[in-house]
Structures are given as C-alpha cells and as structure tokens.
Image (cartoon, rainbow, N blue to C red):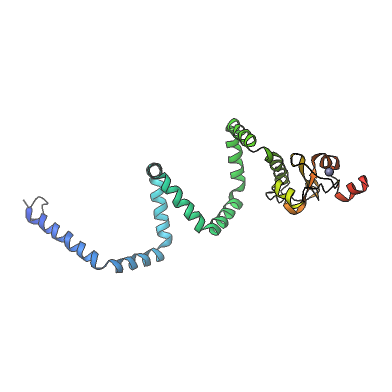
Amino acid sequence: MSSTDSSDPKSISAAAKHRANQATYYAAHREERRVAEAVYRATHREELRIRNAVYYAAHRGERRAASTAYYVAHREQSHETQAAYRLAHREEIRAASAVYRAAHGEEQRTASRAHYMAHRGEYQARAANWLAAHPGQRREFVHRRRARLRSQFAARVDIMAIYERDKGYCHICGKKVKRSAASMDHLLPISRGGVHAPWNVALSHRHCNTRRGAYGIAQMRLAIA
Ligand SMILES: [Zn+2]
C-alpha cells in the first residue's frame, strides 16, 4: 500500500485538512475573489460567450427540460418576476424587439401565418367569443384593421368617449344621435389616407355615415345643403 493511496487513513485526513484550509481561505478572500472574477469576466467576454454557447448547444435538451420543470414548479413566481422585469426594462425591451423585428420580420410573419393557418379554427372561435362578449367593439375592430392593412396609424378610439366629446350630435346632419345608432365618421376617410384616431373621427348617425361614403365632409355638406 503506497502512502498516496486514498484508502490510507493518513491521506484521508490530509485531504480533509486540505479541504478545510481551502474553505477557510475562500471565506477570508471572498471579496477579492469576487473582484478577480468580475475582472476576468470583463476581459474574457468573447471567450466566455463562446464557451457558454458551446456548452448550451451541447446541453440544450437537458437545459430546456430543467427550465420547463422549474417554470412549472414556480409558475406564479415566474410570472411576477417577469412582469417586474418587463416593467423595469420597458424601454430596453422595446428597443431590442424593434431591432429583432427589423432583422427577422419576414421570418416572424411567415411563422405566425403558418401557426394561424394550422390553428385557424381555434383562432376564429376565440375571436367570435370575444366579439360576442364585447358587442360595441366590432366596428372599432374593423376600423383599426382597415387602417392597419393600409399601414396607417391606428389608435384605440372609444366610441362612447367620442359620443361624450361631440355631445351626442351628428356632425353630418346636426341632429341628436341615439347611443344605439352611434357611428364614428372619419373626417379624412381612411381610404384617402386618413388615420383612425380620436382627432380624425366625429360622431355621426350610422345612416349618415353610410350615405357619405368616402367623400370628404366638405362634399357631403354641399350635397345636403
Ligand atoms: Zn346624422
């Protein structure tokens, strides 16, 4: 039996002593070590990035399984943490996703179109449920979609807020509008480059609005005068 054999009681106690010394040393130099590590990380950033990437690529499956398990076990916490993070880094996230979208816009569109086509039934059912639960919002939905398809600016416009602002009078015929017949008229029609936003809409009767079509308000006023 040699003196370096690990089953030798003398070498076991030597190893234990060594470990104890190490622990004491680490505890005494914790701050130093932290600084040294930070310096190392800062000066070897690229190397570390590559090393991490290689490690992650090699352990992708494990890593994903572990994070899924963690997420499932800590779902509530994860949501809170994420919400807090998003709130604290709002501007950064916005900037980063704009950069990402610019670089991957086409990919994203293709992927989401494919996802939509594969789950069309579910999407349509969900949309129908939503519209049934929010009756007044269908027109708003249509306006915004139309503006979006024309790549125009579209803001959320609440028809009841417009009703209050315009004191319940139709801007086309000048008569009182019942809430149930309220409609939003685009002053500069969307088809002619107008935007869907509070400052480009006015309260009108649904039938006045339909009659006016895509003519400007000036033309309509002439027509009814
Ligand atoms: Zn009217």
